[in-house]
Image (cartoon, rainbow, N blue to C red):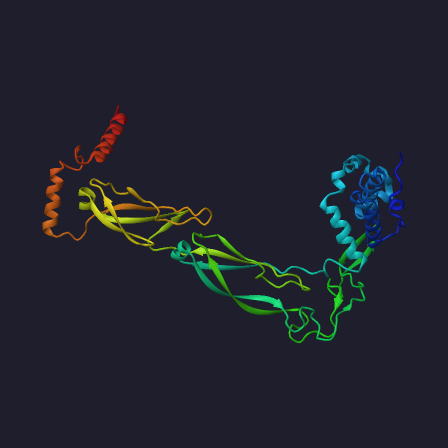
Length: 378
């Protein structure tokens, strides 16, 4: 069956402008929408027809193609517009009750209330503060609604007047052949209004630069690159809209003793040669004070000891990490004559640095080196 002319479907002339198209669509869409005509197949089909016509004529390129070639310009994709789910989506309601209403009553997106911008504040904290949590006071620059004109930009007792160039729309249309180019009004710069008598406090901007002080609660377990969101603490909105949010970006300073990896803490603990060989007990630091760590005899340099529950409490699941201590055997320095003699005697008792009994790791290494060179000479 032949399709009806799209202009006839919407009841508009072929020279109709965008505002007329949207106005006609809004009227028909509300009349035939399936939610208002449940079970009425005729209304459902009519709604499909109206929506299809609107989608073609509201698009400049598609409208030009339709004016030139008619329905044949779109025969290959008609099948895509036949399902109920397509025209009952939330975007359709936005078209009907959002853009269309705005144009009918003289509004424009640039004139509408616009949420304020989100702000970001970079904060450096100590590892101890990140692990245990704290509170920080910050002072930030921001734009806030003018308290004199309450965001209107006009002096008290006066109101902005509608722009005579764009008639309050904020946009102007320039016809170029088959195409219409839309651009911001050069008189009001897209605002749709002109302030003749600006507020002396904000100079017609509706917002003023100021500083505000906020108390930020740092939860225990927070880490570098985590962000804390403070609702509605960003810049004030335009035309009375709600403000944006403030994001506090966390960076944890490098600690002189501990390194953090997820919820675990790491530190290096130096011990002397005698302690490593004979064993003993040492004190190691934690963020809650000192704890004793038992060093078994014959401990090798680099061995890792785990102290349960002395790490960082997770900010997500409240589980607590561990403290891992890596012992480093320190070579003695500034030896006196007696100490040197004692170490010489000890070394002699090892039967050289390859002593099998006392230095098994050294023996394995040098035996491997010997086999390597023997294989090269075969």
